[in-house]
Image (cartoon, rainbow, N blue to C red; front, side, top):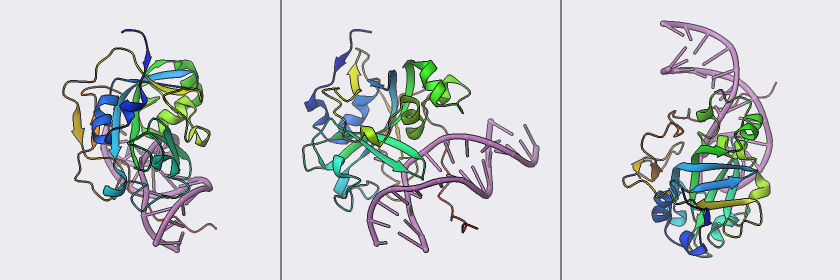
Amino acid sequence: MGRRRRLSRSFYDRDSLVVAPELLNKVLVAGGCAGRIVEVEAYRGGEDPASHAYRGRTARNAVMFGPPGHLYVYFTYGMHWCANAVCMPDGVAQAVLLRALAPLSGLEEMQARRRAARKETELCSGPARLCHALGITRDHDGADLVGGADGVAVFDDGTPPPDNPATGPRVGIRVAVEEPWRYWVPGDPNVTRWSPMPALPRRRPR
DNA sequence: ACCGGGATGTTCT
DNA sequence: GAACATCCCGGTG
């Protein structure tokens, strides 16, 4: 593969349905580690009932409404962080959720953070897993992926996106399940395979 | 291997 | 108070 080149601001300044498949095989760098993006999902703001931005701007989703090429990081299920690349111009809230990476470098550090992972393919196979492996937290919400000054960036290392990316429904949502806005690299062993359980009612604290 | 249930806390209704 | 763009673990086969 060639030298690593940062993606330009204009790369992100397009519809998330266009950006999502093009992010496949790009390289995410954070926390002293790097991984090749092999699974993503597009979220389309006001037109998309599954998007955090569907009901308008809040403190949590503010970064989604900002300029393209920044990282939107949110906290979910009481313990997990997930990261998105923000798309479209300032004021339009679209983003691409990063769902799985093929680990490239810093594997020892990933394993140290992800003690539960028993195989290399478990290090970054899931949106919360990859954030944990690369040390991405709320501190990275709003980080500039183009400038890279915040220690997070996406690079093109010369590997093109797949000619025929696999597509299918997005994972873990209850609305707009019919939209095939999940994209992945066919056959990659790091792509998520499980289906999450629906959220269960929480028991009363004793 | 597959499956089911529990964990955890922020956000928004 | 309900929902949540999830993951881990222990049970069973």
